[in-house]
Length: 177
Image (cartoon, rainbow, N blue to C red; front, side, top):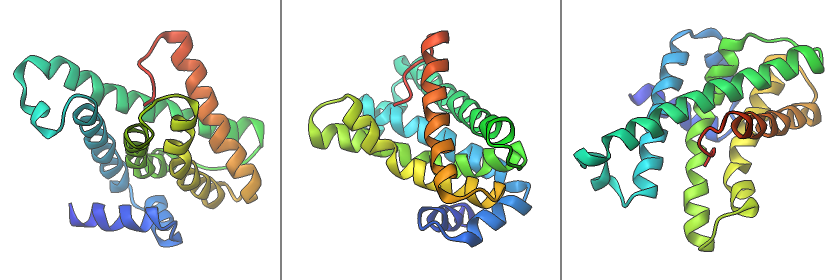
């Protein structure tokens, strides 16, 4: 777990070494999976009264729903970003690498809960502030993996988030928050 946390901190700092490690280390996909699942559990705890709620037997169905929702959102966002790079802006990159850096960026979405509590509201501003760092990390990963200019990488990262919102609306999935 120490290696995961070290790489996560490097990812938060946007250090190139973290992205290189994710590109060449297949194990990073499993590490990203762990980070996404833990983030789903922490979001559940954030919405339902703290870590004590994780052990409430009556809420296990919701706990599983939050964890699975996080995993589905992760897979969808990564796929949309990869498809946008591959087919729209004609970039390159492997889907597995997109899964890795998106997974390592996913815990930053916990900021949506912190921003919602700080602003005492929810809405588009809370959503935008909560996902800003996520977008920065993913854009840096796209820039590294696909050799795209920074501006295009940001557009792809934002476009993938927009695509995820549309997919959620079409299929009636839980909100991204």
